[in-house]
Length: 456
Image (tube, rainbow, N blue to C red):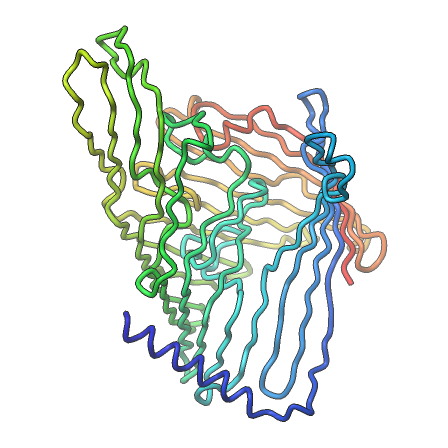
């Protein structure tokens, strides 16, 4: 691994030196594309409060000069609700009109470098792997972006060195990620992604340990892609880390035991230490057509680092000191997979179905749930209106006890395209759950939403 790292660094240095040999008199033509979008969501319950109100300006610059280009994606997020927490905030523009700028992508790509039929790309990039629609088990290079949890499949850009080689019928892609980046999590993520016994823990009692920015902590992946009998086939391997944390150590104390049958009843948690375990992922996927229907499938086998959670509990003074308790929470390989199809019926009705075993946040064979993701669309009025009467997912935690362990999410909507480049969408998010699943946290969050977007 160290030898590979040194080789990649030498190649990057060579790329910089080669770029410097171009004439300084030449200038690339910078072009811009982008969009402006608004998103308003209103709770159907909860006193009909706005759950979300924001605008986003997306800018997509691109510049080309000779066998190279620069490309980027920048988000200017304008929050629609003031964030005034104290009287001084009334005099601060950023508190009255909160905003932030995100660099989603910014990279340089050089073609036929350092070899013929090889392209080199360096910078912040989105590197999607897999064939799944929005969710792919083999898509693990970029960390999850769960700031808006209902926006499935969104990811953060990663700082990546990428080489793509075209030696013949097989395309070889190698990626190197020097520094680890964690997932971005929503507010209240502790209750969503930590074990149930740690739910409600305050932030000041949580310590997050990021991997060191060192060579031995870098991630590396390779992908082989080709075409066989009309089907696109891909095999991939990734050595990196989970972007969601796991509990490494839990500290607490019991001042008094009032129930000998359940001595942990009065446990007071004092500190939880989180870390990001390593993982290796071996993936395969294919996509093509069967008759008039599109089909795709993929599977990823995860080989996790052994995760052991150590609990150190301080007992009451009259009892002998407690010994640290170790619990193995992750150690065996497990597999996520999906299969999907789409079909356009005569008359223009479009159907998309996907069956998934395992969502991106789930790990370990015991945690994986089954999901059916679906969408039915129909365009009318010469394409000016798109009606989506059915869209959403069905989550099945326990098939043998379906009535008490499931989640059903529906998001029907209607989109109107009044002029070229403009889109207005009116829809509903409705959730019905039974049992303890991730979606049950949003049981009371049914909402109606209005979205607008103008692309330029």
